[in-house]
Every structure is written in C-alpha cells, then in structure tokens.
Length: 284
Ligand code: SF4
Ligand code: SF4
Ligand code: SF4
Image 1 (cartoon, rainbow, N blue to C red):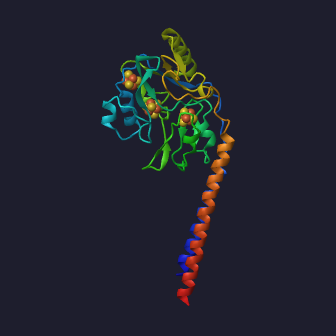
Image 2 (cartoon, helix red, strand yellow):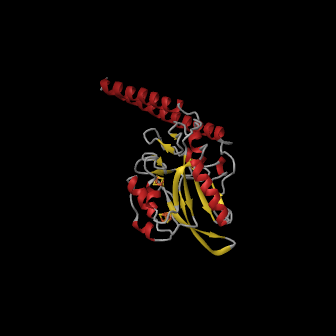
Image 3 (cartoon, rainbow, N blue to C red):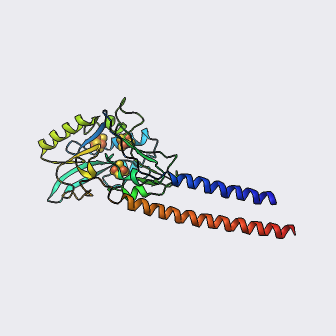
C-alpha cells in the first residue's frame, strides 16, 4: 500500500519535470539563410484537376486514400490525413473562368507556425521546407491558429498536427511525389531562384497573379493564378511576414499551457493526498 503512494509521487515528479522541460523550449527559431534553397510551383492554367498529385502525396506519406475525394469535384479541405487538396476556383467577375488549384502548405520563408510552437516542433529547413517534428508535437494547435492559411491540421488518431513537408525526406535528390506524378507539368520543383524567375515569366504571359511572391513575406511554394486571390474568393494573407502577434500568441499559449499545467498539478496533488489519507486510514 505504502509502495503505491511512492509510485504516485514518482509519477507526479516525472509529470512535472517532463512538462517543465517541454514548456522551457518555447522560443521562436528564425529560419537560417541557405545558398541552396528550393521551391515548388503550381500553374493553375495548366492543371486538369486529375488529382494524381493528391494520390501520390498519400502514397508517399502513407496516408489513408479516399477514393471518393479523388473522383469528384466536391470542394475538399486539408486534414491531418490530406496534406494537399485540389479544388476548383472561379473568377467572381467571370463565372465561366474555372481553374483547379493544388492547395497545401505554402512553406513560408518566415513561418508564423514555427514562431508560435511552444515546444519548437516546427522548423524551417535551410533548403526551404517547413516541417513538423511529430515526436515533439504536443497537439496544442497554436500553429493552426497562427498560420494565415490555417494549414496544419490535427490528426485525431496520431494526436499530432500534420501537414505537407515539401517531401523533405526525398528532395532534392528526387522531386516531391506530387510533382513527379503530375501528367501535364502543372507542378514544378527546383532551385528557388529559378522557380521564381520561371513563375514570374509565366504569370506575365498569362496576365495572372503570382501567389506567394509577397504573401506572408514570401513563400517557397508559389501558385500562378489567373487573377487575384480576392477575385477567386481565396483566403487573402497579408503581404508581410505574419509575426505581429507572435509574442501575443506565445504569451497566450504559455498562459493556456500554464493554466493547464497548474490544473493538472493541482489534480494530481489532490489525488496523491487523497490516496495517502486512504492508505493511512486502511493501515490504521
Ligand atoms: S502556410 Fe502556414 S503551416 Fe505552412 S509554413 Fe506558412 S504558416 Fe506554416
Ligand atoms: S510536396 Fe510532398 S508532402 Fe507536400 S503535397 Fe507534395 S507530395 Fe505531399
Ligand atoms: S496532378 Fe497535376 S494536373 Fe493533376 S490535379 Fe495535380 S497538379 Fe493538377
């Protein structure tokens, strides 16, 4: 009986230590400059909406395949198991002008998601991809709140937040799975500066709009749209680094985590006390 109390105390100390270590890691980690940066490009004027990119992403990342999603034009949203979606966009000024858009993480140059993560689970790799370390992620979803596009989604089975990795586990040796699967060359991948030059030229040719050139301070995934995001009814991100509220969000996240921690500690302490009293009574 007494042994059970000791174990409970040990659990209590372990919980406290683990949680404190986790919380102490919560500072932002600015991206480092790299001479070899890569970028991904989607040209909506070439896309035929076949969704082979979606299947390829799921196969490469071992995500559950939803055949229905792949066979319809029904609007779909990102989830913890769908890291890329292909949806139709319609120009509000010209309802006949329809194009498919390959939508996924934008791999911001200065990612707001990484800045607010209280356990530093998100990193901007020097090559360009923004990745979540699932071993560190505690599923708090502050990255979702901070992201101007609400990209990172919670996986209810794995209990972590997940999103497109820009296939960091195969690039640059092999292009991302979605890019290699595209049958019409609507997706492209390469050295960022070359991708940017190509994208600007093509945007000019089609008289369109280059999404990601300035949004959120610039992103390493670019999309050639036929017109502005506003005209297409898309989410409009600010054209500057989304970091204004990072400190506020971090404070809020610490406040929330602190409150949760305190509640947890109080609950566990009260349980320990209760058990101790019960055991003493039993012994007597
Ligand atoms: S789009 Fe959102 S999830 Fe992706 S890097 Fe930018 S802030 Fe992070
Ligand atoms: S880059 Fe990789 S992880 Fe991202 S959408 Fe394409 S296949 Fe999926
Ligand atoms: S595979 Fe290419 S053409 Fe097909 S939906 Fe994806 S981006 Fe569009």
